[in-house]
Amino acid sequence: MKKMQHNPKNKIVISAKNIYKSYKTKNKKIEILNDASIEFETGKLYAIMGHSGSGKSTFINTIGLIDTFDNGSLELCRKKIAHYDDDKLSKIRMENIGFVFQDFKLDNNLNARDNVIFPMLINKQIPKKERKNIANELLEKMDLSNRADHYINELSGGEQQRVAIARALANNPQIILADEPTGNLDKKMEESIFKFLKQLTKGEDGKCIIVVSHSGEIKKYADVVYTIEDGKIIGDNCED
Image (tube, rainbow, N blue to C red; front, side, top):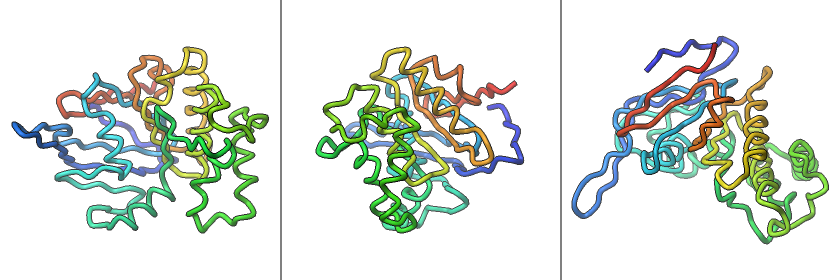
């Protein structure tokens, strides 16, 4: 793997070292991650690629503290999480990570605005009176101001995905993990989503964006592309 040059303006927010992850079936042990070591920093868009079943989603769930790992060490925002209980892990996720899923995972019983407000309900740092304004501002950024009061089943697939991205930004996390965020969208909408995610890495408060994708289109926007093969992570620095 090529050694990435660290930009002093950015900071490392995820550091995984010698991560092993496997699943046991009745007949054998299947290795998903094999001695994976990798770092991610703010101000960059990373692409995670690989064939179906290569472990891309498992990897992103592991660094997102949704899934556990067998051996190795993982630091998120300089916190070693190996011995954290579920409550502490949930707090770290809430404060530092926003998730965007291929199937959106939006609540059909809520309108677009309330879906964006939902992650803020457990964030004590955001006053109740500010939640609606934050949600409205995020939906405006996603060009959805006129759809804020619409329920999810009244929105197109592209609109639902943009609501999902707005929701991921609700708690202003440093890290966005996006698992196949454009898998169900047409090419024009895919380009729009990737451009927006890239924009989130810009400026002094640029975020760390990690995108799992089958689409080669992501390479146009990624600073670094990683491929998972046989449980190994292979890197290709795309920066000039």
